Amino acid sequence: MTPDRLTVLYRTYGPIIFARCVRLLGDDAAAEDATQETFLKIQRHLDRAPDAREALAWIYRIATNTCLSELRRRHLRPELRERLPEPADARAENALVDRDLALRIILHLPQKLQIVAWLHWVDGLEHTEVAAVLGISRRTVINRLQAFRERARKFGARVA
Amino acid sequence: MTPHLSSLRIDALVLGALDAAESTAARAHLEACPGCRDAVAATRAACQRFERAVLRQRVPPLARPRRLWVSLLAPALALAALVVVARRHEPSVSVKGGPALHVVAKRGESVFPVEPRARLRAGDQLRFAVEPAGWTYLAIGSIDAAGHASIYYPSQRLPTGTSVTLQASIVLDAAPGPERICALFSRAPLSAAEVLHALVAGGGTQISLTFEKEAP
Image 1 (spheres, chains in turn red, green):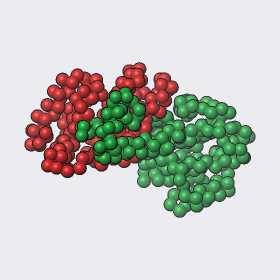
Image 2 (cartoon, chains in turn red, blue):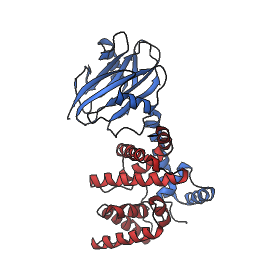
Image 3 (cartoon, rainbow over the protein chains, first blue to last red):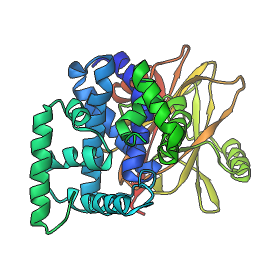
Image 4 (cartoon, chains in turn yellow, blue):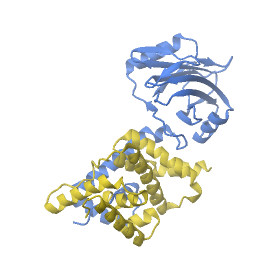
């Protein structure tokens, strides 16, 4: 265990990870628990922690998986109180519907697809950003999003 | 307008982790997009809440999440009642000639001192007072039935006085089973890791009190 490294990571990234968990889980108490859980996992894999710029992506992945686990546990549909666009026109309205639909089905699909779908459709990350966070290739991201679409269609859902 | 900022980009912006070109582009988008501006503001606000509520308590990321709340906003009346009770009673635990720990619980309107093996409930609010007996730094933590250690009160210098009532209080969570509260006294500040180690492994000058927690 290297408490100093962990403390530095916690002080640097704790607040932003908490903010992320609030966004996914919808309340401070659950977010605080998820943040602690995230850093417990980080502590277990501290030897793998990347430096500086890549650290945010790495911690982001752990936090996102932690929150998705919590959402699966709760069987709750998360609220996106801050990020839903205003449906100013038909196109935006469709995007809103699609996003809402994506949220409903994301939690019912295999975990490997969940996080890719979440980062792309809910968090709005581009393919390259998703690839960086997950440490996979952009091609793999595209393939998993395609697999997600196919699964979603089986649900009879419409995902753009 | 350029595409909305992704959550990752917003977080990196708030963290100051974008390079100059990315930061300029993100700020240009924010000029034109109230939705993303709101998202940035919400992210900053959440960061500040965490810094105020958690980082300043110096609670380390080593304890399992517990639904224990450190409340710094106990109503003044409750605080006064607790202080009176704490001073009227014998210490909950003490070391002969050494420091003493008073633990006082508030349940609804009733306030009572906590004795060893007391039966407490989820929702009970606990406050602490100590008689330092010359020790200058104090940390308080707990170990639950599963062996998980948590810090309630990070190692801090005590104000002078023969009896000191701590400002922080905790509200017990619903996890059942026995729980041990430890007051750890020292002559120099201890890091969170040192406090946790002492809680788990024993050692140092510490006094502890074990209570049972009943299901709500």
